[in-house]
Length: 467
View 1 (cartoon, rainbow, N blue to C red):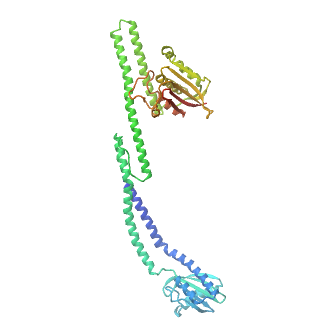
View 2: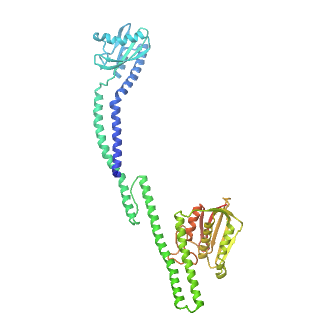
View 3: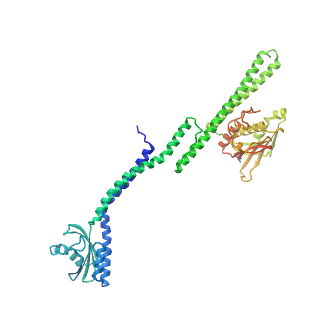
């Protein structure tokens, strides 16, 4: 089983390994490729010197120019005319090829080769017999009888090279040690705010939703993580509050019909068993409360299915106008018995493709909501409106004439069992879960929906459907 390592250790290892690799790469370049680089640079250098030597000769420059050129570039220049040396810097530079008698045959080999080659310029790489070191020679033809030879040692013999390499060892050691220390402190600085966030997240997991995620970090990702967790904490607080309200409200709505069912059942059994008329009245109340209890359970199940995506859409084409009229007729008893007025404007036929049962449920729930909150005139206005900006869409709206909703409360009304008043009141019709069910159904259909409310004038709920 792979053992987990802390983030501090991971960052420290990665930084340390990276710096170690960089130093190793530097040393590989220094040790393995330095000679190759030095040789290529030397070849370029003596080619340029050969051209300058030609220029000095053509312009009849004196020997001081050759001396300066030789000295500045730590090279050796030899000019031969009619098989005689007319200029030589041999002996003044370290690593030069010498033309003494002992080495005449070896030295003359490249000179004679170039003279006999009848070429303008040629480069040789030979071993200096005097110092037994590799030397590069650039030969150039100055005129028909005159030739220039510039040679440079291919082995860096300057003491400064040795000093540089010694310094490189010291610097590499210091950089390696300091990089390990720096990597440790960088990792600690990065990890410290993450550890604070982690500790507070553990407290949040244990139920502490009061402690904020405040981390003083200049790292964008950590700041965003802190903000995200603060938002999550706020949402969890809302969920907890909603859960408490839901339990309290559901318990209230369950307890009330159960209490009434028990009370009227006992009354029918004990007090009205010999009074058929009273007994029937008691039984009717028991039936109504049982239906209300059944409605509450069904709404809770429906909401649960919608929120867990277990309830899929079954789309079909149907006449939305006819369905709205049918739903309105279901409330005729309220018009007859309690004086409610249902006004359906613009009854033009509208054909849509959607889940018929669920859209009916949306309209039914919105009408129930309007019934519960409309004003003293008991008017509910249902309308089909055209949307000017979108010709292929229409808006269904249900409006009441009640006291309206405060702006800060509008976003919360879609929550389960949310009430404008803090204390839960039993609805005249329905269970209090209607708007949550509406929201879930409309989201599944990908329909735009919303609410408009004016204090003292009422509230209008709406949703847009494609036609």
